[in-house]
Image (tube, one colour):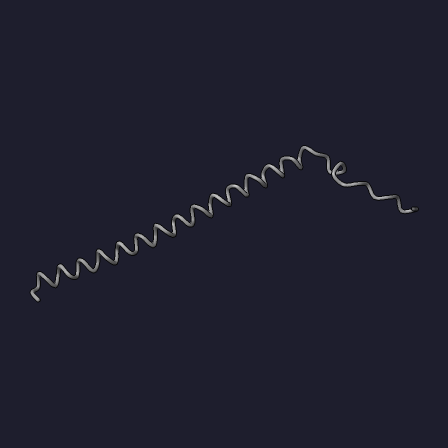
Length: 70
């Protein structure tokens, strides 16, 4: 095998490795985007619940316990 053929083979191997790496990273980014979307949804839900708690008096949510003499 000539030097030129060897260099071409080396470059082809490097390109194949880089393509595999890029595909793996792309898959990982897609998974992370899904995770971020789920966390954003959960955060919005929690913010809504916290906002609702701030609008409602705390005593109105729980029944008042009976006095100690009962």
